[in-house]
Image (cartoon, rainbow, N blue to C red; front, side):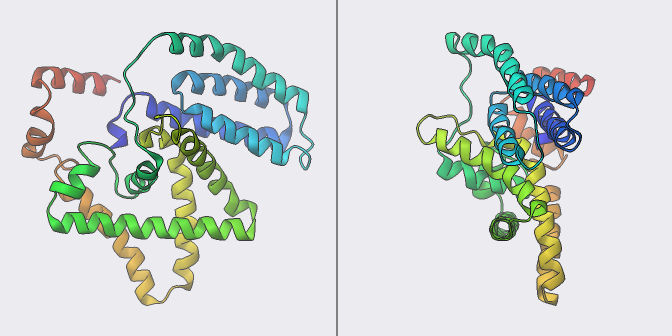
Length: 276
């Protein structure tokens, strides 16, 4: 589903991963060119989507945790953050003075479960999750719930395990996943800004933590446990193959898309997507 969102989401994911890569290189080498490149990517990401702010908060948190052990330069880092803030500030002022289309925002109590489900089975919003869980046939509903519950439980157990063990290899994906999610949730309790789809850049760390959990539990699990893990992936493949939104059958497109969008407009949009 997210692969069809040819807007800012893919660009934000790319910028986030590139920035984290540059950040890790800067921590390892402490070379100024890596910090300059990181600052530039940070500016681009902030201008791409407002939710980039939450991963910038995460990056500064990681920097604080690593500052003494890795002997990082505080003045250089602060200058990089200050320049990014100054360049981004005019856009913040413009956005506050001009109204725009409101986001698809929900309360965090609903948004966080929706985030886990979307990362597990794909899709998010009116024509995906709601359709899967309400109007889809019972076998599809059962498949989606089964896959989402099992992957979420494995990820949550891996999160707890990482917190207890405090091993960097386990803590790294959890820190980069949970800090933006919990930060957005904290703000979302007071302002309607929690957008599950805008947290798409946390997906790589969800899958990284999930894969670590699958490897860990897969080695220790009995035969039934291994079969259960295998069933998760079979369920997701079945869901994506048979559910109308994900399939390429013309009736599905007719029912879910063409009844709400002018076909000529849609065809032109699809051509623009291909061109993009």
